[in-house]
Length: 221
Image (tube, rainbow, N blue to C red; front, side, top):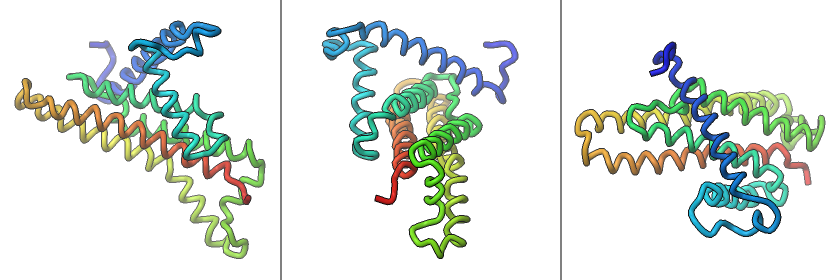
């Protein structure tokens, strides 16, 4: 429907549309939040603000469990990751739509962003002492540990991207097949499964990003 958008570039157009939509939804939630006492009192009815409050509270509790009391500083970052990936995943449930998270290029970019983020946290918190993480607990094993740690960290963006894109592609393919065979009735369970898979994959990506941040800022004590 958009001139110039082909099968090879549809994920870029979808990602751009999802980005604009997420920013717009966020702006609506912020306008509903209000100021002062109104911003502190939880929403009493279903609203965009209420959805964001539920997601933020969930991420806040999860970050505290995984990272500790320092986790609260990263809640905006993790909430943004979770909501953005979740929103893109949900696009794939709409008939005829191709989610950006189905494309390895997109999910690999997400993985690189997470990779840069946790390494930035590590250097910010510990400076050059962060490099000790690559040496291992025993200094005389550094000849073995350094290559292992470098490879382990280098493939994290790839593993994050592959996990997300492959699962979403498989789920979208299954749903598309049943929609083509029997468009009414039968696909409903697969829609429900698609919603569940979308939530789980956004959760897994966010959880792993939290684990990487927790490991990056961990010190000897």
